[in-house]
Length: 351
Image (cartoon, rainbow, N blue to C red; front, side, top):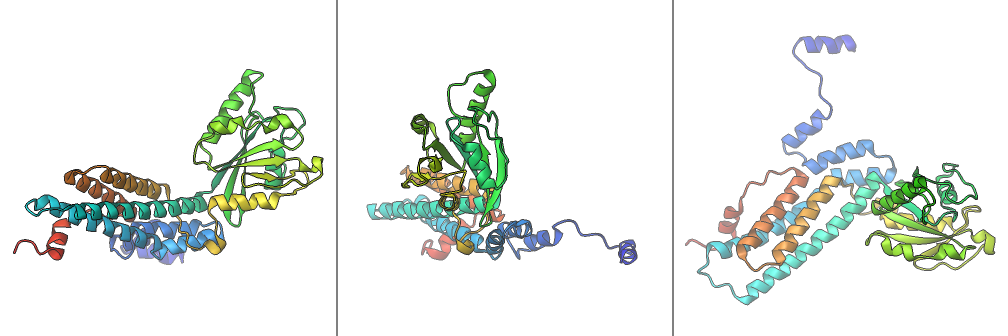
């Protein structure tokens, strides 16, 4: 086979470059850029759920949703541009109200797609979960229990953990990146102070936070630190060491009772992590998304918000153009402005 391949190259053939056939399919408009990325995601899928979601992206589900939004942008742009180009036509208040209503619908659809894309990004890249709390509440023991091995050093001495300890686990195919951190308290030395600063930095960058406290230590239940946590980051209070107080305490919507020693309550904790990650049985409705997809959707959303905040038609039209262009970056389309053709094909103007 090597000799045959070598002879083919001698006669003018060449070795295909990595991804060349997918690239040709994109250049020949058989698939768009998001579908091409779905091929790579399908190859790299580390779980059955990720593979299903990548296949959904490859089949064009994500691209179809983006295309529908782009069409909504175009339809709204067409109306606004007509108002600009033909000012002699009176624009009554009902048209203004309709425009605002369509902007509102577009915003809701974008927010919905962005939320789904964020969950797809978590399925692809994993959810970073930070274990925070005061010293000696069992954060390291909890990490070891979730990881299924002794990843972190555990001692009864407060302040044992001075720097990040990381472990990655898979729950139903979803990667969960666990980060054990230094205990939150007034630092006793320079090394511990740096460790506490890194804890706060990890919390700022987290996808979710487990605020661990001890069932037998009333001082650990001071939750004033929760006020410093970033808004919008899912947080669950974890009441650890319930084995020392009878082995059972009631859960609440914002608190779970567990024992890192015996494993009690860990199934409920895993279920909460999957819920935060947006996991659904068999990956229903999810498609894999990349960071650039999230940035493009966020940019489109911001342009819609900006368009809704002004009455000037020219500013609204520009924001809609930029929003549609941002969506075009997802599928790899070069935004050629066909707006004039859309106007003449849908409006009876110029007779």
